[in-house]
Length: 364
Length: 246
Image (tube, rainbow over all chains, first blue to last red; front, side, top):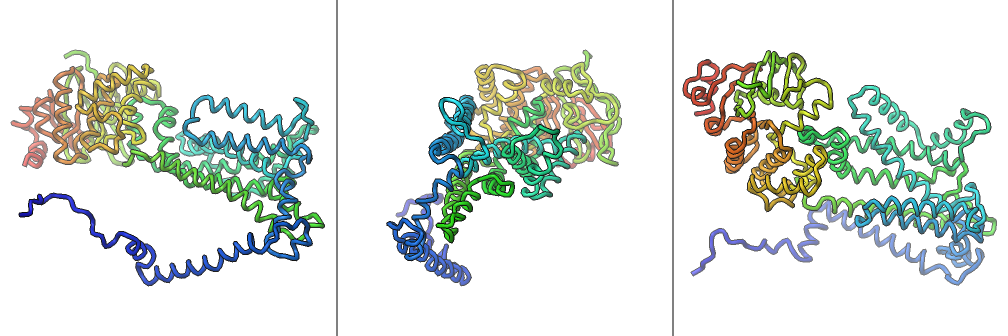
């Protein structure tokens, strides 16, 4: 006799498992789905082999001149070999280019460390101080036997990294304060924040950069000038902060009233509530859009070209303007696209893992 | 009667045009246990929420432990330190473990050392009979367990007064008893002043010194529990009791 108890557990039916089941449920579950699947496969079939052919099969890897490249067609790797230092470091003195390289590595290292939870301790601040001093010494020089390089000559990747790192580092706390200010019960504070946010969001970054570079000096007293790079940096910070503020405000509004009341009933003050209860939850909700802002900030730094700062994009443009290597703009822009992509994709992956980590164990 | 620990004098409050609290007067003696009942919308929650200033009253006086509630933030925070509150929907902090929920107030508001706060927290978790859940997140607990954590969180602040705002209304029926048991124990073993908005009449009979019936923002009737339930005076009270006692 079967002694299975009425409540005994059974395994799920096998129909929907296995490769066939997966294919059927994920790729061919309906006529429309089947058409989309086939369309996607066709697109991949068109694109991937062509790309591999262009990048790796056609080109002659031994080519060293533009003429050889033009003959074989495909991606001109010789161009990258010839111009990568100009693209990466701009017009920084050629013999000193190990300095921006090292500075970039230090900067990226510090950023990576900040992303790892183990480093989230007070000494991270010290680490940043050391890193920034090192970057400053390497880029400017003038001490320790390094020749002085004025920042008008900085360019390429280190410049992009510096602009976006400081952009994010300052825009984030500034944006937080703006978001809190916009939700403040004090009408003065609230009005200032609303006006600021709406004003900045109503203006393109390009015009902000122009204003900071062309108009600002007109208002400053004679003989008093702020460095062009610093002005661009400030414009980027002011711009991004307004977007951070609105995103964070969305997160703040998603926190139920009960959380404020729970905190109130314990006698926590405003800043304690924000720091311990509200912001940790609100920021967790807005990680995806916040990272979106940081990624676009990273790419938007390329707009500084319009006020003549030599960032990665401008360097790519300069590399193609060489008469000998004219006509290789695809090579140049693909090269910097790859660099931008590596950074943006890393940021995006990191935000996903952060979300997952913060989600552990706490489901509502 | 000794000096009241809570005194409401001619308290009035409006939500827009709606008059929620009408000329309320109430004195609560230290150690007194009061159950407040009444139909929904009668202002009972609003009244106890005024006592720790989660709601602002517009007219009249509320004096808690000798301090009048005004707009002075420092005074409000001082009163909140002495007044614990348990909510219908628990209002635990979901991003913190149970232990962190319990030590947050003592560490940040009372400035206790962390180890001491944790020891106190464990003591109260044992009292509400869930010490083994200390390192879980609120979302991993049942409703009854969450509410007991919320009670322990208030107790960790060592309050003089505890306010309960319908503490069992959001719970599944089988969990109501575990929360009520904790509250009964609390009432019987400590001399804490308790104000409890609830419709648990068994609880009221067992622990209350006084039952208050509110309707339309007014206190209609108040009496010792036996007299209140057995010989209600007002027609509205009789109607209400007949509706909830079936």
